[in-house]
Image 1 (cartoon, rainbow, N blue to C red):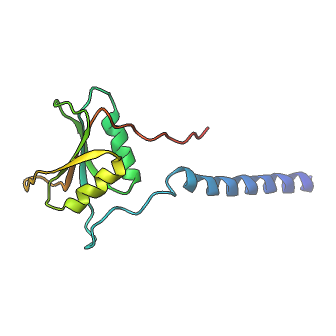
Image 2: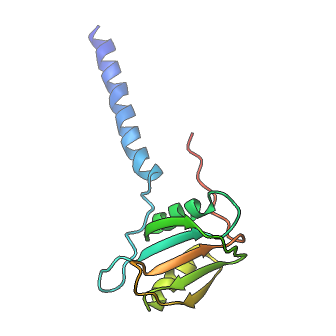
Image 3: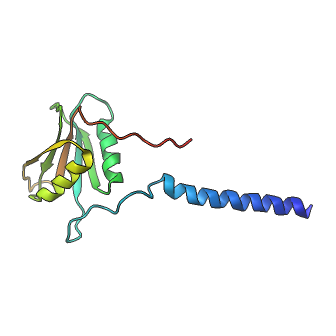
Length: 137
């Protein structure tokens, strides 16, 4: 009887260790730290879906968060875009360039708007393709 109990305890310990090591790999161990400027301020990003593809803005939000950006708002705009457009709202072009680089091919424009609590606005265009998601059964 003791052998059976010892065997079950050993199997339980192995399963617990395997689960503990698999969870960080599955849930973002490859994430980078929050993208900040040199003074330590977090870059606040707004993502707007500028396509008719439902959920594309949400996918872009998840991708940018995985890249370490602080996405504070997600929505949809009526103006349709073919290519993704990154708008610099706070006169920090390097922040907009970092977001555009993360998304791949994107145009960058400066449209300052001090009335917003945002640093960068992303208008996701129909040419943007979200990266493939890993398969976890």
